[in-house]
Structure formats: structure tokens, C-alpha cells
Image 1 (cartoon, rainbow, N blue to C red):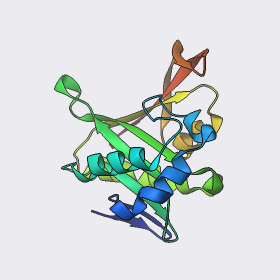
Image 2: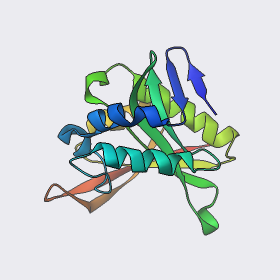
Image 3: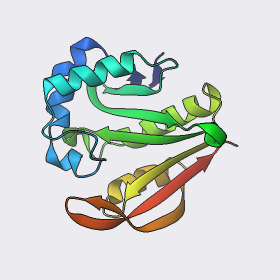
Length: 171
């Protein structure tokens, strides 16, 4: 399954992505803005394990972000369970050399459409650290609304901070 919009493509991860994935992800500036389950430092072994996990998904929920033919990041939906089964959490990161090009906003739009139309989701949400203003802008540009702020709910880099919760509901 590939999702395409001009120079941007969301596609399944390939084994050949391992080196570039490790290179992009082994960046403290990326790690500072994501959850701690993403290891740092990030090795090619971590990349291979992640790629293998993604390749086993059915349906596809995690995608490589390709821009002008080059892998530049990752985006995915984490479907919730039980009474939340029509909801998913969105997560994404873009390699630092590609920041500020509108890639994340377009990728969020593509995967949101996929989630609503192919996965039959009704609600997609994102949790963003209070200091990650760029990601907040990405979500707002993609049509997400700030739903609430969970005060002092995140512990990242030995600092307690707020989580901004954004949401988009299928029309």
C-alpha cells in the first residue's frame, strides 16, 4: 500500500531503508521530541528490528515517508482497542535535514485520510510535548484541533512538562 501526493509518498519500509533510517533516527534533536521507546543512540540493529516489525503489520499502519525518492522520516497510526477501537493515535518524525519543508503536514494529511477511509477510523489523536511547537503547527495545519492539555503529565529529559492533545474527527 502506497499513499502518494506529488513529491511525497508514504510506503511500507524496505530492508534497504535500514542504513538511512538509522542515520536519520540517531539524532538527539529527533529523540528529544518523541517517546522514550525510541532508543537513543539508534543503531542499524534498531532500524532492522523496527523494519521487520512494520513489515509484519496487517493492515499496514506504519509507513516510511519518502520525499523526492528519498526516505526522510516515519509516520504511523496506533489503533486503540476495546471501546476505543475506532480511534488511533498518530505518531511521526521527520529527519532534521528535512524540517521546515511542509513534509510532516502533508504526511499527516495523507495518513489521516488513509485512517478514516481505509481503516474506518472515526477519531485520530496526537499527544505533543508542550515544547514541540513545530509539531503543534503541523497538526493545526492538517486540520487537527487542540482538545486539551494534560498538565505535568510527561517526564522527558529529566523535565516534567505538559502534553498537548490534538484530535481530528472524521466528517
